[in-house]
Length: 354
Image (cartoon, rainbow, N blue to C red; front, side):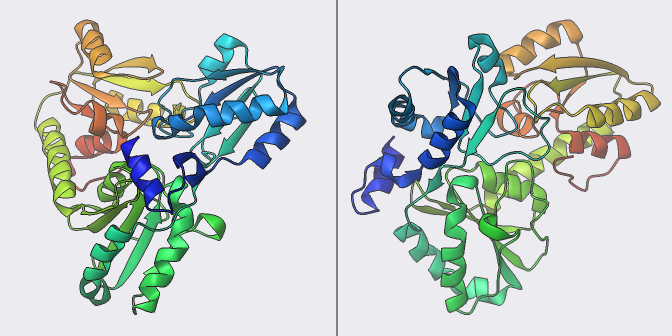
């Protein structure tokens, strides 16, 4: 909450809830069009302070709607809280904070996606520090700008600022979502050793993902909007990638008899084709495969699972960030699909995510 207060102070003293576009016009149209009796609201943890604003607005449309709030941390549009909706009998879901995930299977109830765009400008201290790096930026082949969903509207502002200073700027994608990235999809981002990359977001999540996509030598800056910090991700990138490559090298040089494939339940995290492809490659090597279905898997759940499964390695096919962000401290290798393919092929060229 302190980060949100800091952001508010930087934008003329506005309240935190005034800094995000909650799409109330779309919410009204969605409710009037679908006429839900029970409605589930899903907000990521960083936007849960807006819950009362959302609920109050919905009640102002119709006091007869039963509104439920999901406590799910909501890491992405790939993880809709459909289980929560089913339990309470909700007949519609409003998902805040993300843009619709194109690879997800069609949900069983109507879903409205509200990105909750940030309405403030680029943070001042971060921009001052970034502009001090301008000589580095101008000497590179170009500057690539990316942003998470809430901050994608700032891409155009940053692009103009840098172009006015003589930089060649690339904003991948098209339309209103130029520069948009998610935690597992960086396919639109050009890869080049002479590019400098800037990620506009809050927290390390999206910048770390870009580092994994680009590799060791990438020059990645993070503009953390809520903290008003400019962070050079280079050292953190090298540290994370070194750990992942060491893990893969261990698997390449160790006998593997059994692998557990963790299969996601969420509409955007159930990837049967990927599961089958990895299973087939493991079976070709004579490796025993145990398939495990999981809504979400934490370190404690993995410890309990390992007591029964006793796998030599765990491949997470649901979300490629779980092995890197949440499960990296487990005493056995927990790897992404890309890392599994690397280990099976004997390659140390990093592959993220699949």
